[in-house]
Length: 83
Image 1 (cartoon, rainbow, N blue to C red):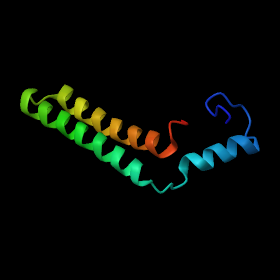
Image 2 (spheres, helix red, strand yellow):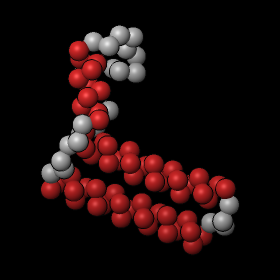
Image 3 (tube, rainbow, N blue to C red):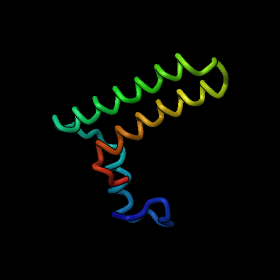
Image 4 (cartoon, helix red, strand yellow):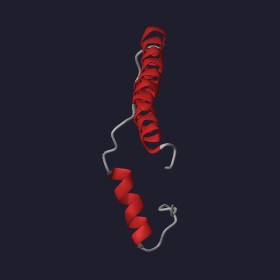
């Protein structure tokens, strides 16, 4: 798999990697369960932040980063850690 972050040219291998990154991949039952566990953990973290951290710009960013973490986790689960 080519390192698309360091590629200077659009080779067929780079194009195939980019296509794979953006292609829909159906999750297996094991991936669904992993996604549910991640979701539950991140929901728990957000609930604690809401309960214990005063409303502020920092709290907003912290919650947003957990939402971003969920998306990154979903991607890692989907692609088996390739990217």
